[in-house]
Image 1: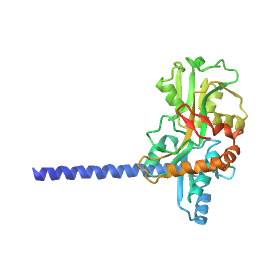
Image 2: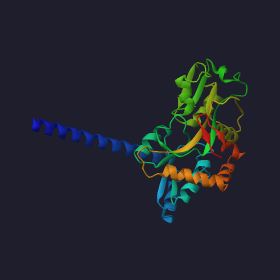
Image 3: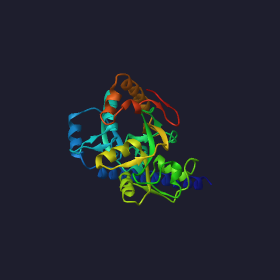
Image 4: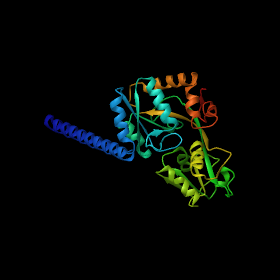
Length: 294
């Protein structure tokens, strides 16, 4: 009996080691994929690293103007990039930015390939999945249609086709059927690349799209498009920075304290104002789940 128990224990240990090995391989694969996706500007990042000996915090996000994107020189820029650079700098860190596959964000932060997710990321409904900072901005999730559309209210979406990015709040709302304001749709297109939702609407594959209002307005400005945004939002959410549940460094609270400082000294308003008109509009009020301090 003792020998059998020892053999069973040995088998269990081998299984645990094999599972840990494949888990590590999966993390490496995800990290490599993220590095390939974020290839532009990598040489510049390496050069900056040699010139700056502060500990590095790797921030993961996908491309999402005006929050995270690359400028004409291939360098990361945007609201979240500037906020992260300033906030982590005050904590004694250097922020490095990695373009990731948004669908893999949770796995990447949990396996340590990135330190945090910071990319117009809605807290609401995900509170138990990560360690969160307090919200640093408010954002309206809205529905947009072509100018000549007969859709004027959320109820007009009945029997229509809507394009969203996968693993986002709009996708969750339309697929869960939990919001009584939202009628039954003909189809929901869940697209991995969020930039594809716009040509889906422009070319008529979808009757409407749903995303952060700021992102839709930015895309309309960049490409001189004229979509019409419905007056009634899907929801108003707080945006936060997410860390893995097993990350015990306390960075989420440290960042929250820095956010308070940045609001008080005007830095938060100044940074948001570089990209959006009326920055205070995005810094005060309430999300659908609770209050954000101004």
